[in-house]
Image (cartoon, rainbow, N blue to C red; front, side, top):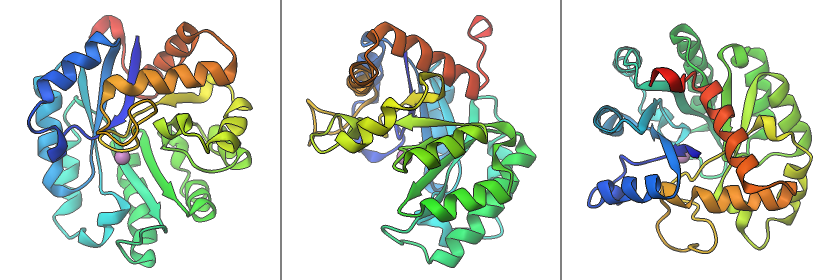
Length: 259
Ligand code: NI
């Protein structure tokens, strides 16, 4: 059994064949998928998918790209939607200093605000950090963001950062890019992190792992990421599947016997 801790099933890329995508996931052993609604237009769709499929849960928040769109209605709306028991985390929030779709000062302000909101909601956080490692770490520390746990999604920092995040109560989530040819330094770094702190994710429809690189990504492909992780850690695939699944159930506070 595997869990895809981060996908975007509400995106238009899955509009036509969502049911087949979910069936292929199940057939590949992907028992649960966490779909992340990153902006206003996607929240209801993400929650709708989660409510109509027992294997799907939702994560809601405002992506750093969309930080500039936050207005006075945003947080009350999110607060209400996040009361739903199918919403298991708040995110993805953070900093993206690579694309800078929103001005940096606004990203920083909205990041801090949303950590506060997630803490009020007692939800774990899903963090997006691209080219902003130092600032992200600093904010996570000063805002005591690890209070309810969380995930550094699509982790791209170094070993020191990974360990600091783990120390604060975060899991490190490994995307399909770990299968890429130029991923050696990243693989070396992952080798040094305990499996007990790792999750696997697709970030579908993005970041498609080898052997499907270049095509649309989908949750069933998370097995290629888990296979690569097993190879890097020199442990059986089953062990990676079991431990990353337990980790995901822990951070999202899912009790399988109750589901
Ligand atoms: Ni994402």
